[in-house]
Image (cartoon, rainbow, N blue to C red; front, top):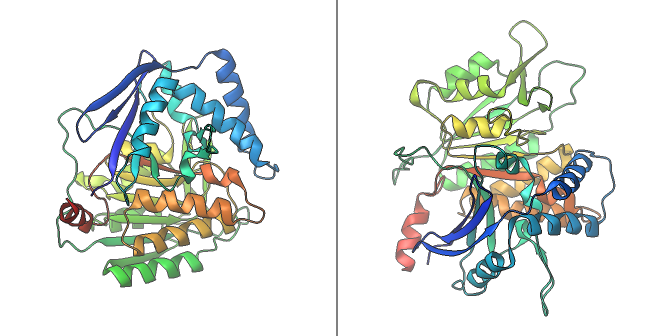
Length: 375
């Protein structure tokens, strides 16, 4: 049987409702709890999360995750969702898709790190981070415009993978350690029969030319930054003359989605590629790519070490090689990097974020066939 999908939608009036997509069955209607105290506390945790060198205790992350849970879910809505989780078919998972309004005041909610959501303790069962729950796949869904069709992956079509390693000659930037990730990508492509193109240290214009070939998956490895004053994310590319060309989110989206083409999925192996500011015209690299037509973006919303980014990407491609789709691979890799760190670091759990604009299989067209066979 296919995995079940539940959307959790916050509307512009602050009301919340969950809905089972297979048969359109809704939960009760609740309200977001986001008064000034909630906003101040969440903002405080968000500032702390940007501090890479701060030592976190798991109970502190649980407190933050519990606060987020209280903010988003009323008891009635969560009991309804929990019932779907408890009664799902064996071997399936619940895809929990979070949807936030584009208009203020609740557009601010889209920039909150919901990947730290923590399900509260139950009478006979401990709580769990939703991003680590093996029965869930947590993502952010950004609906298409009315009437805009979702992209379709033609069965039998060979998936084209473009790998971009960007390390400008800039003494201010650390070396990009990419060898382990590249090896995992090569192994996955060979196993699944994907075609692969590699670009090492390209200029932005070289990337533009290659993007015209229509890759389905683009994996970027390099440096990223987010300017909170301008509400703008950027990635570092080699300048054609010398030094670094910091390509901002809108320019990058234009480079990768020109002439009506756009990759189905993009993985940003860089710090702060997933950080956002939805008060600044949908700013941030990942959301801008989604807005420009990319159907799925996996990115990091806070700074991470090279070791963590490598561990995440290697795990991601190991799971893709197992035949799962990208959002499932991200969910499993989140849990792996947080639990396998020494000591276990729950801050890492919420750093990878997935944005979706398509509910069909992204990289594995056989997923539909498998689902049909299981019915």
